[in-house]
Image (spheres, rainbow, N blue to C red):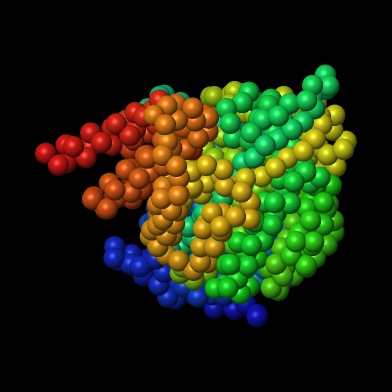
Length: 605
């Protein structure tokens, strides 16, 4: 499809950007031509704010899949039409995203050169702008500054948090684009807490006096879900028994998800992700079953496995071929054909893609509906980027399913999908709470070049692993069956077999009904328990009982008050303290159960 010529971008009257408060999530004839059939309400509202304030700097924070690209290109087209700018520079995190931006801009009638390099100097007069990477800007910021000074330039900083990743990147961005006429910063993921301010972002002290980034417009996951702009996500958590040998020669057995030390949790997770064990083949088989169920209703639905390194990615691909009977697409970011492979997969109906980091951020494959989180990265930033690949909605009712290990850090992130974060300054990043702290430097070094895992001197050797289904996390709540649920069982299929087309409320009701129906069957067939049986439950079983009790009370509160489950969980956490229910202690869960009962009693009286 050819883009509309630039001269057709006629200036709009500012009054045309007035927004009706009752506007639905999308309405026609507002998007930059060719980028979308309609502009969503949040995009129109952000446009209205932008052109009302006429700022030099604007930070838009919108959840992955909400349509930041369309918003930015609509702003760019409007600025070009009003002759407020005459050139555009787009800064993206990766080479692939440069091309993706150029293609989207072409559909909007804005020709962008994605092959431009700072040393190149000039580009064809057919182009109105260029697309570069943050790393490319850091190489020669002076050349970029000269270009920025020579034109009235709009700079679009895509995933602007990358400007804080390295001091040289931040300094390069500041030097190169300080003279820009306009700067539009975009991000869709939680910010890290560190001491490096992101260029051209405003900071203001929070309640604790610590400076935090201030967004000019924010559109979070919870809002987008309510607007049907993104899909609801079912997190399928799997635990199981792990065995490994330490450097000292000791053989250790532990259950994934049980309370363990940071080192033991890290080693248990790496044991689970070992393709030679039984955990990964079992989870990949479960994910493939889930994909088959989704494809009953969404025939072109695809799956993505996110791996830690190339060796694992190839091994997972081999397992998937044996499971599904179809060879998956393998994407390694140091391959020249990576972008072409992703584009081809996006357009066809193949079942699976396996990638190393390449598809963790920004890459648009809207048909992805099932994911397997098979990487040791555990930061909120990376987790949100990864999950963001699956949430883009194409039509109402589509759901996303992400399979992940029952590791406290990941379960906590899954439970807090709706939490909105700002960039926090003056608080150094520490290894506190990072279960992979001991090997962070090695992992960063390895993943920078995507070296095979065999090049790392890990302090353990995986011996074996077995997977069991743990629970489903959805909308702040948890759903599952009591006792050990084996892979391939009917109990597991209660959750893997959920239809691929359901509204969010229908998903919640179905999870509740399948959990309670199985519980009734188990109760009828179970022998009468002795009085002291409960006290003999293992830690993970006790916690599971308490979480189910809490979720049942939250569901009852929802039916009574209409308050969303996630909001109730957040209110309980605010009053009682502690982390998300997925990783809370028994005392914290007891406190929330008691508090919710107090609320119910007060409402009754």
